[in-house]
Amino acid sequence: MGFSISGVPIPGRAVEPGLYVVATPIGNLADITLRALQVLAGATLVACEDTRVSAKLLRHYGIDARTVSYHEHNANAAGPKIIAALERGESVALITDAGTPLVSDPGFRLVAEARARGIPVWPLPGASAPVAALSASGMPAETFLFGGFLPSRETARRKRLRELSGVPATLIFFESPNRLGRALADIAAELGAERPVTVARELTKLHEEFLSMPAGELAERYREAAVKGEIVLLVAPPDAAAADADPDALLAELLERMSVSQAAAEAARLTGIGRRELYQRALALTREDGGEDGSEDVGEAGDPGDGQK
Image 1 (cartoon, helix red, strand yellow):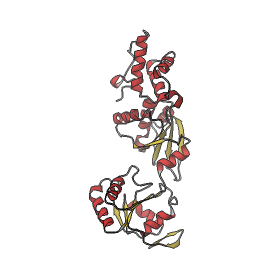
Image 2: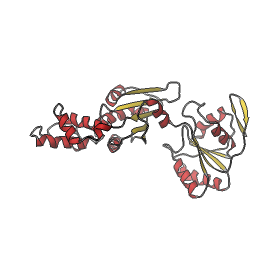
Image 3: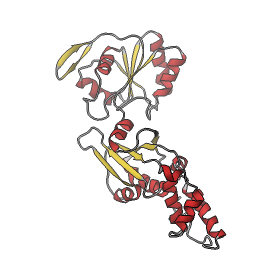
């Protein structure tokens, strides 16, 4: 029982019975705490998202642990067995492939069940991709919302973005490299092409990259690009001053120099209000003024756009 750092053996000891929620590195294996190593070495069981992935970390630190698989697809079967082990007085370390368990991970079911049964649960803080990305992005960090993965289908993804458009916080999402261009295009369409966005890729790894641009420019940059690696998207909050402004007054000002669809998109970017709602308001204003007749090209449900759903 024990672990090693750079080949130097460090004796370990058994840990108290209970469930330990242990953060592990998100890329660089050095990003782990001494306490995490002590618990991984001293626990009677390590519950892993993927035992093959976790084996690399355990081998790197010379930890010989008894492991069991616990993930989204086997949680219903594996969870009760882990709870039974905890009720027998064993100590269980819960880890994910990378980062902090329960963040886009089914571990919350295990933690909730353990707490409901009076089993001690201890958090071991450490690496977390959303917080790491936020800390180096330059985005406002006093208030943020982590939204997990955006839906894979465009209609659902746009709906989700509209729901979050007015949240006065930095939005943080995980995204697949295969969907990055499409996700950025939807962010530009629903939240405004000028909304600041940061793409954080391969955090803590050799090819780590941060790229910050307006959403529209990023969407164009990644439209056909072949992208690899783990990605975190960060979207700046709506402009605070504009968010407090009267949307009709703002639209009226914008309509003096823009089309209905352009004014709606710009007002959405500034206020965080959904673009469809603002488009309908802009149409109503132009009709009151005897201006445009609403014959402008529209997409689904009166939404200005390119016909995409």
